[in-house]
Each structure stands twice: as C-alpha cells, then as structure tokens.
Image (tube, rainbow, N blue to C red):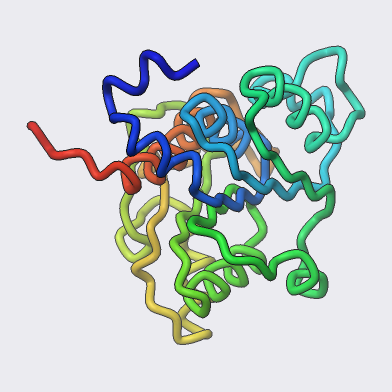
Length: 228
C-alpha cells in the first residue's frame, strides 16, 4: 500500500517508521486525525489511550465517527477502522481515561514518541514529566476549540505560544514543577472566538492540528533535507 510513499522517503525510512513505537493520548477531534495520518503513513506500532464513547456532537469533526457508531467506544471503532486500512497495524487500545491516580498503571513502557492530543492539563503535565524522565520525545496539542482558520496553526515550543488559554495554564503548571518550557507543541495563534463559555469546535482546526502532530513525528524520523 506504500508504493507511492516509498519513492518519496525510501525503503529504509519506511522501515524506521514501521519500527517506531508511538503512544497517542486522545483520539478525538485532534488525535483521530493524528491516528489517521499515522496509519496511512506506515506506522505500525501504536498504542492509543482514550476512555470516551462516540457522541452525536462528535460527528461534525471527529474522523472515526459516523451515525452508525454513536455510543460505541472510540478505541474499538478506531481499531476496526485502521485495521481495515492497514492490516499490518499493531494497534494496542487502552479504553480508559488517564488520571494522575492511574497514570503509572498504564504508562510504564518505553516509546519513541509520545503524542499528547488530550485536553487535560494534569495529564499533559504528567506526560511531559514522564517523557523527560525517560528520555522520550513528546509533542503536545494545545487549544483548537473556538477557532476557525487552520492557517494560524504552527509547530513551535510552548514558551513561544500566544492567544491560547490552554497554553497559558500549561506554562503555569510546568513553571511550578520547574520544568523547562521548550516542549514542542502544535498551537493556533488565532484569537479564540467569544462563544459565552459554550463549548464549540469545527473540523478545520482540529483536523489540521492532528495531521501536524503526525507529520512532526514523520519528518523527525526521516529528517528530509530542506530544499526551500
């Protein structure tokens, strides 16, 4: 299935990708598109953690959802979807919500990359601490709700973000832990739209953010030359 990818990156790089161990936290609006991109780009060793079920409100932006799998587990629906795309995929599913209390129970292996696509500040902090302690690479997604235009998305480090309330809270928490803020992140510098505290989101920003997360890992592995 990768006959059009191999000429771009070479067989050696594809083997590197296939042997890379990924931990993906969250497969919602952002993480679902991350998983989609990983599965279609040769990654085979992926662990996903998400305890949520599919809700009708997810249909406008989450790629694994459809009107026939409402109320089903996201992890189980993801497994069916991505094995149908790549049957070589070794997709390990953990159907739980990560908390500080159960973190060590479920996060104890070595991964080459941790992709944080969750929206829980405490878990983001724990993932960053775990990655640093165990010399693993990590990239985190920041806020994509209340935003409409994906052109404002970029990959940078946490200390260089703006117009992102989630990033502000994360910086504050990491400073309290004396953790450096040079964490790779995907964020949007678009000013959030004031929706009077109503939860809002559309497909455009989360989907591109998710693909950015996967692409960051992909490019870091193959390390292409910049021909610009």
